[in-house]
Length: 222
Image (cartoon, rainbow, N blue to C red; front, side, top):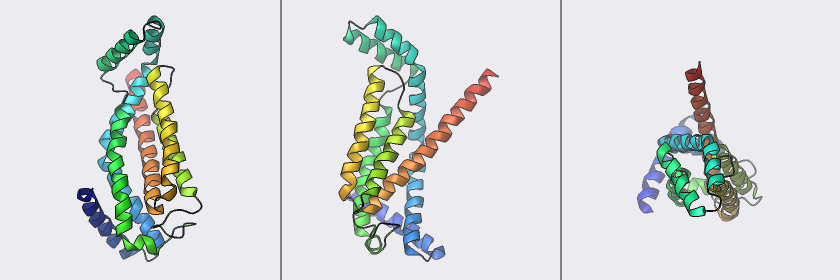
């Protein structure tokens, strides 16, 4: 994990040096550091976010065909799964595409744990009701917000419909959101705040991506 922690620490310190040139309040400075740092990471990951969002929209459009397959092969689960996978392949859609984005972000969260631990400033400053960004939130408000923002982000991209893959994805979204709440109870507030900011940025990205795709489709119909 050192290969991520060192460059991320240097990068964060560079952002902090820039921000503190203009902002004297350290609590606000560290919050802005996290916003800028997270925004840059989310920009780097934007192609994956676009791919995931497009895939989700495509799966939603495929729901009538998936329902037909369910009805046709309801007594043959293996054949049903084969036909569903065939349909996904023909449309160039991967129902598990959202997992890739999560798997890439997971090492970043772990690295952030060490980045926050390595930077003394996080221990020395608080933010709003949090006494220290280098310690856990004793009110547990941030962990709860992390779960809510994770759930909302998942709802935006989770496919609608009754097919097993859509249902599984919605259940997974709920379970993962609860897991984040529990996991972040003892994480430093700075890390949890990073995750909340990351979710908010991704929600905004997904909103604009979905609207852009809809506008393109409406323009084609005109």
